Image (cartoon, rainbow, N blue to C red; front, side):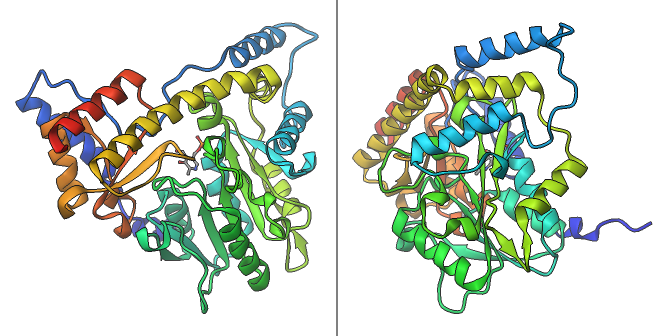
Length: 394
Ligand code: PLP
């Protein structure tokens, strides 16, 4: 018996355990501290009414002989895939066919699982800082990963460059952790690069619903040529508060062909072999979120987070701290004042403001000197945290 030794090459992520440890130690000295977590990556608003009603109704159906559902289609029920196809059409004017859509229990699983259809000997490119899942899943499979630096110099949006060799390219827009988002012109350059080199772009659109600028595509398929080079991952986690409910979807276009094989067919084969679909009540709830009433309810929650993001962004503007994100994204990526390093500023904020952020260095070398704030806390806490920061640093 031999284990997969690649697992020994995965870097331990101490980020969130280290944050918890530092907070615990601080609380020992200052037991009454009113801490505010501004680093949370999870949503806090409850599910919308339409989702809850649909889920309850579906659960009741399941308790009747006529309404009982056993194994569903591995690719997802047609009612949800059609709702997702309509969502693409209505939000972006993009036509995605129902059989190109694969419903799943969230984007994270699909982002990891998609690697089953690619050979080990592909070079993978990720941006740095990065959502760690892209790196770790490839290291587990023994692939080589190269990093593309994101910095203020490139607006935190790395671009292809002459001589770049990359078979699989991960793009996350709006980005976690930086909050930066590719406009159509820049995204077109990536699509052109991928088509010219035969690469495949794995496009993570988990935060598409936070986009408000017209020139920022909510889907890579809004860019010409993307259907022949890109797979898109999306999720109801941040769009509709489904982090605990679990539902996402992946689009593999029919015209995405490599080595004469349709990747859609490979993914279908992979899913029908290893996956048995998402719970019926969850799919009903997801579909309800994408219908008119549901859409207006989830829009209220997104507007709430976006207002929080604005409060944070306005504070940093006032303090003249350079930052990115916050406009088309729930994340605000801010440069630590006075050239401080990420952890030093984290400690300083914790002790002096009792505010918890996420050190940027935890997302990659290029994250050093930055921290990430999120807009997922309550309005009151967001206002209070920013008040404290202004009082201390203003
Ligand atoms: N992609 C990005 C960039 C994320 O930040 C997250 C969650 O934080 C995910 C994917 C995972 O989404 P899901 O909850 O659908 O698995």
